[in-house]
Image (cartoon, rainbow, N blue to C red; front, side, top):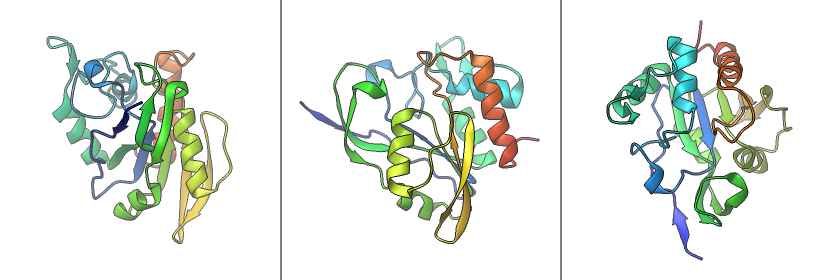
Amino acid sequence: MITEIHPLQPFLPKNAKLLMLGSFPPPQKRWSMDFFYPNLINDMWRIFGIVFFADKNHFINQSKKGFYKEKIIDFLTEKGIALYDSAHEIKRLSDNASDKFLEVVQPTDIKSLLQAIPLCTAVCTTGEKATDIFLQQILAQKPKVGEHIEFQHNNRLMYFFRMPSSSRAYPLKLETKAEIYQKMFKTIGLFN
């Protein structure tokens, strides 16, 4: 079975206060843009649209059936939100991005990511596999979905949020997911 190396570089704005970690991107044939959460049926950018702009379609380019990549990048840079995934190399056991069909060959070095963004005070994971990989490296307690804990990293007191997946396969309404994410953004000072 062929392994896949992560096709994107970590998105690490210098002002990042939050590091969001997913598992691994879907197969590229499902991408609508060359960036994180690229599948049009994944709701991450709709969640951001609801939380920050009260419009689930804020980041969606209706005419091209895709996302506004530059608009997303500008917004993340302004807010100080970094993105990457918890797996650097995987074997895909099925032709999708479901966590249960991803075998992690090499996890991401999360501590190195945190070193690159010294202003970061919070990490969130957006799925079960990402959560498990993070906890293997940081050795913290596993919070319930939608909750957070505090942990120490390099003399930094940080928050760890375990968030619901933005996949439509995750059994929670979009609006409910947005409420949970909004609570996280408020807690870390990214939403007033």
